Image (tube, rainbow, N blue to C red):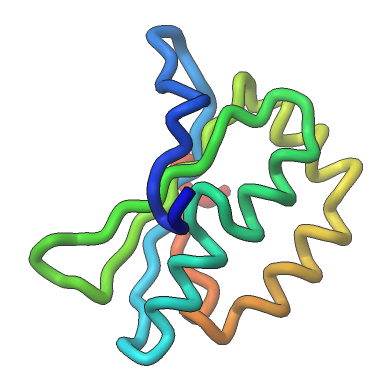
Length: 114
C-alpha cells in the first residue's frame, strides 16, 4: 500500500462512527515525510491499529491548496478512542512530539476542541 492511500480492507461504515478530523498545513519540503507518517499505512495508523475499535485513517490533500491536508481517524465509538488514550497515551504523546516538526501539530476540527 502506498502512504496516503486509503486502506481498502477497512471500508467506510454505513452506521455511526466516531471520527477525529485534523487539518494540517505542510511545508513543501516536508510533504513526502508527512504523507508517509500520517497516511493510512503511516506511523499514526500503526499506533492506532494496536487498539480495539480503531477503524482506519484516511488522508486527504486539498486539490486547490496542495499544502493543506486533512486526516480522518475513525473509531467504532468514542469510548474506544478514550480507552486507547488511557492505555497508550504516553506512546501517543511521544509520537506527536517526534512528528510535530512535519506540520506544527495541526488543528483539531472534529470533534470540536473542549
